[in-house]
Image 1 (tube, helix red, strand yellow):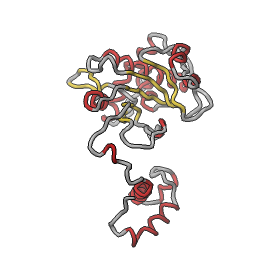
Image 2 (cartoon, one colour; image 1 turned 90 degrees about the vertical axis):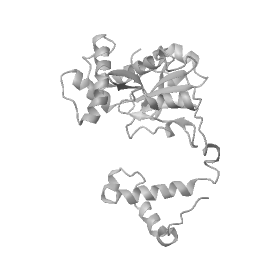
Image 3 (cartoon, helix red, strand yellow; image 1 turned 180 degrees about the vertical axis):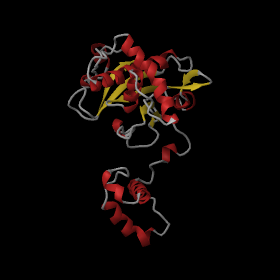
Image 4 (cartoon, helix red, strand yellow; image 1 turned 30 degrees about the vertical axis):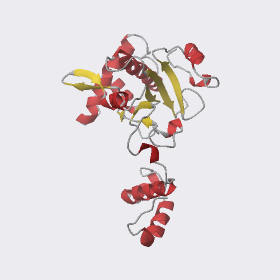
Length: 262
């Protein structure tokens, strides 16, 4: 097992005691009275100590993740743990505000490089778009689309602004009822956005036809059901009808196919 050689014998006891006295989450309320750097270092030490000797053996010189999953960069969405992954190299995990598969280059909307890289350079043949309930980016875009201000600063506004047309399209088409309460509207817009992102990938020339594309919504608020942490499958290669999706999933996983828009 890997060990530190930076004087850990001298300070290991104190560091471990300090780590044990606070929550393991560096951003938790309990840790705000403690040194965040110490919390990070202590957490990494626990990570190092937990790894078997051969943990990185198969991926030290190359990677071939089976899936690229683009998630919202919300801290409540555990990008690898949500799939039960406990080994490196399995999931390529780009993220941004609002789990958007696109970016803009000289005014042109292009597929985000975080998705294209594994597909073109690591033989990845599955892409997943993962939204989540209560998405702040979708909420901000909805408020802008209905007359509110951009949240700021500029680096955030860029991503919110790219979502505003998606929200406007959903409302103007009647796909999402804007007369419902905001929580209901936002969560339906989350799903609509995931479907729109999947559609963009399916239409993009840079995505080979044999790449499977799935859309999920990660639920930690009990919006889709009473199972927190479930990734609800709402789109399979453009198919959004829950009944049709249930026929395509492996036996036993039918409860994961649910839609707020159906």
